[in-house]
Image (cartoon, rainbow, N blue to C red; front, side, top):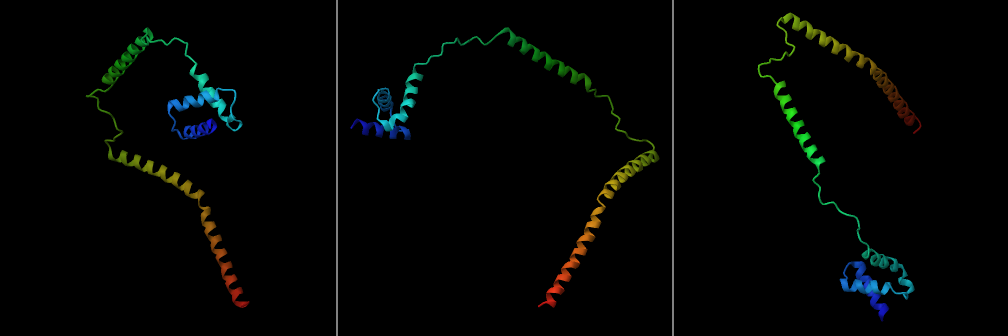
Length: 159
């Protein structure tokens, strides 16, 4: 009778439907020496719970988290932000006009553009030469296409 009740409680426990009193009954049953042989598997589980209830944390927890060191870090971060802001303020001068590489002489500008385009063209031609072998690949594929024609005529002859 007691064994049936324990098995039902175990089933409820596995489904997460037990109350605290029912779990206490299970802990009490498995803390005994006499446990049914087919329920021996559950004994270490409930013994762990009884042992873990007795554990205590004995170390001191420091509640004063404000230290002098954290104040130093706060002031250092404030000083760093102030230095950055001052640096940005003095670096950007409103009256300073930047040189964007413009030319006053149109012929000089034209010559520079021609130089740049020639450099780009030569780099492009070097790359195009390296993939020139793909034309040979296409001619090889065309020759393989002739083999299909031979196969078609052979199949017509032997039919």
